[in-house]
Structures are given as C-alpha cells and as structure tokens.
Image (cartoon, rainbow, N blue to C red; front, top):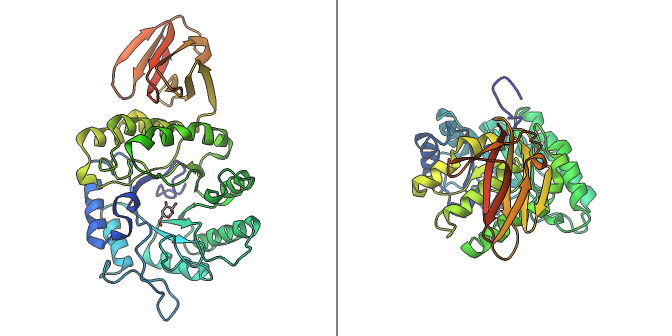
Length: 378
Ligand code: GLA
C-alpha cells in the first residue's frame, strides 16, 4: 500500500454499476450514484471506489485504435467522468475484457493491452476489471490465457503503478481442473480475482443456495488470500431490493463475504436502498471482519449446523453459524471448540446488536438461516 492508501492492501470496497444498470449506464447515472455514496455515509464507511462495468465503451474503437466512451451515454468523455468522481474524494474504475469483445459484444482489449493501459492511465483510472470474455484465438489454452492476463496486468502497472487489477481468469475454470492453477496464478499478479459465477438468477429462491453455496466452493481457497490479493465472490446487494432478496438474504451475503474477506462492491441503486439495508452495508463489525486481512480457514460441524470462525479484529473470535440442512437444526458447540478456555463467554450478534452470555453454544437455525456472532471469553 502506498502512503495515499491506494492500492489498498485490504479487500476493495466500493460500487459497481452492473447488476443495477447493466448497459444502461450514463454519466448522470454514475455521478448520481457517486454523490449518493458520499451523502449516504457509505463512502465514509469505506465504499470508496466507483466502477463502471460493461457498457461504457463506444461500439467501435476510434480510428487511432483507442477505446472511447459511448458518446451518447458519456458526452463529456470518460476522463471528465473520472475527474468528477475524484472530486468527490472517490476512486474510479473501468471494465474491459481480455478478448476482442466484452460479454456484451462491445470492443474488448485483445491486441490493445498496452494501448488500453495507457489510455486508462491518461484518464486517471484507479481500478481495472478485466473479464474473461470472447474473441480469443481458437485453441487458446489456459496457460496462454494466463499469460495474457499476466501481461495485461504488467501493462496496467507500467502506466499506473498504483492501479488495482481485478480479473476473472478463474471464472470459466470453475469445476474444472484449471480452477486451482488459475487462482494460484491470479494470486501472483492480481489484487482480486473472481472465484464465483455471476449472481444469476437474482431471485428470492436462489439467494440462499447461491450465497451459502460459496461456503463449500470457496473456503478451501483461503491460502491464496492475503494483503493485496483477495478471492472475489462478486458484488453485494445485487439489484437490491428489486431482486426480491430480503434483508435476511442481505445479512447472509454480507456475513459470508465478511468471513471470506471478499471485496465489497455494492451493485444497487443507492437511492432505493431501505434504511435497514444501508445500515447493514455500513455495519462497522461486518466491515471490520471483512477488512481484518484474513479469510476464514476453520470450520466445524454439529449436525447440519456449520460454524466458520476466524480471529476477530475487535477481540475474541468471530463465528458464523449456518444451517446447511433441509430443515430446522440445532448445533451444539463447546467454548474450547472456539479456542475459548474460560468457563463463560459473551456473544455479540452482529445483526441484532444483542449480547448474551453462555457456558456452551446451542444455536437453533431454520434451513438456510445464518447468525454472525463475536464471541469473547469472560
Ligand atoms: C461477466 C462478468 C460480470 C459482468 C458482465 C458484463 O458476466 O462476470 O461481472 O462484468 O460480464 O457483461
């Protein structure tokens, strides 16, 4: 980390346009969300980087070969927009793709890594997300693709040594033998890399399976996470509340993301976030856990209830209890299982704000329910 605090050594916190606006982003939409980030208090809570996802670029490159913003959506240009975001005290991020086309068939960076890195630096871009999308030569192997991602990162750093490099090299390897090699390589040259599929379908029914599914899929990746490089579970509060997710779903998501030290990039219309959702996103204990610099590595089970734990930066241990079973289940745990050797302990529930004291833990949860508790010996 530099003296200016950028690039951050801890998981990036900020905003991404994708799940809310998709390709309908315009400069007024982005400036408004950035202003809301500040006026809501989210920026002061740490959400400081505003990222344009797919859909910002013109349908074709300029005659010079340079990427350009879509002039109808961004009449003042992307450099101007970056300066507006910077003037609000925020960081500015852009999306591109490793192939010739983005996932929305707009121009990608294939054949232009150096040129695009230079353009981004000239615009004052602080964060670049590189997607694993279309238009690579047929037969491109994972090794070659990895080299391309590595090379693009080097170009980005050449023109802006402080850039945050976010990428999706592992995403098309999920469930395949290439996944771990892709994550391992990413951890060498990127700040964050996607280890989870996109959050679709965004429905109430899919919320819990998708959010809790990350536990089995991503816990074993903890050794790749550390200062300056993080497993990325994708955005938080995606299109909330229009997605149909409940506040409990949002709490589940933030609990899992915080335990796994994932970047926290909000992808909702901040004006439409109910006060309770805003409060959840700004919960200082959740944020402290996410920003503790550690991904959870320890898990124990009691019946269908899983307890994930990691040291709590506020003292003691943070434990996320999750019912992974099909029905109501009660988990029973002793204090020594959490490394606590006193007879009694106190537990602070991060979402209800209630504190209880106990000599052992019995936690009854409905299917898919979670509870996040900070436990200290007393
Ligand atoms: C992919 C990425 C998403 C988003 C879209 C944009 O699906 O995984 O995060 O960037 O492309 O087209």
